[in-house]
Image 1: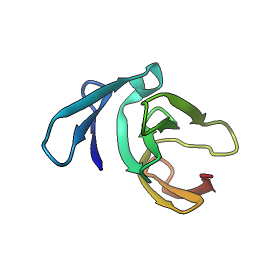
Image 2: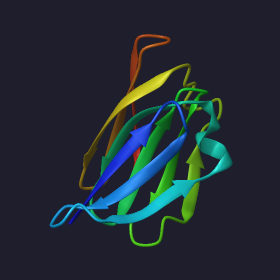
Image 3: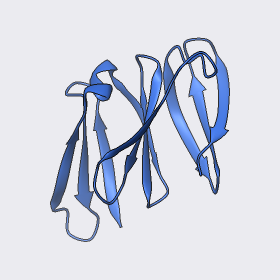
Image 4: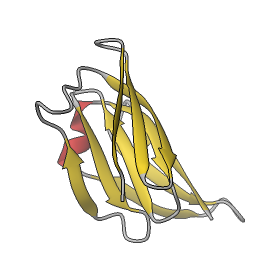
Length: 105
């Protein structure tokens, strides 16, 4: 299993091999440019809250962007912490003091 570390200052996610600390990859994506808040992974997918009002979903295997969770139905203002459960994601938004749940199939 790998460890993902987000950098608010560089807007990058670094993946590190847990067994030996080796660098696996650095994920750069324009969606991360709003400031990384929180990270959560289920082993297959990586969810990254972006403080500019979205949650980016990446493939944990390749680092490729799967989708950008944003828009009026989510109304993110300053998403931070993320928690995953089998098929759901919960995001704490400190900007509007809310908890948003959405499918994470």
